[in-house]
Length: 217
Image (cartoon, rainbow, N blue to C red; front, top):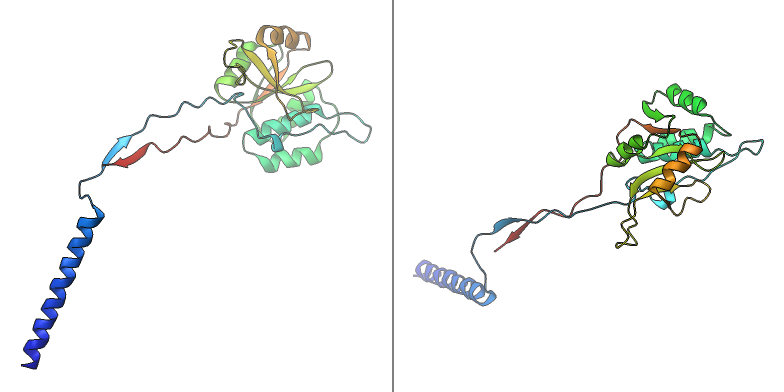
């Protein structure tokens, strides 16, 4: 008798629990319908300029023991940082100083085993390629000075302005990129000697997209 009553008591407890669970499901409004995977449209991300190094990573010019600037070497540090070689960029900053020529900067780049592309004739197609592949290039610009070309493009802060600019990073004032109208830039660059050098190493990956999948009911 005692065993039978225990069994009945146990069955009643199970039944009450099942009823309670059912009540909770009904009250909480649970939906047992299957989830559907829906593709979200990819975001159109246009980085301007294309070789947009974070401000805190843009190198400043420095001087050698004689007071000569190191603008070419600073521009190479920008190139190295942009392609994801921070250790070599720091080595370059610590071990080079003073002025450079197009010959000496190519020789130094060869010495550390880096492949690169260069021009000595103000080849705008070269810089178009740099823009298309998101590369920075050190270039002669302004008298006896070297800066980084970081891409052609319109001004993101003036969306109604269709003008195409060459965007430059001057290592004497690297916190803000400098726009120069494309045709004027082409004339100026040619007048300053037309030299440019871009590393063959691929640039850093583009900005990440938002998630492209989500669950819906």
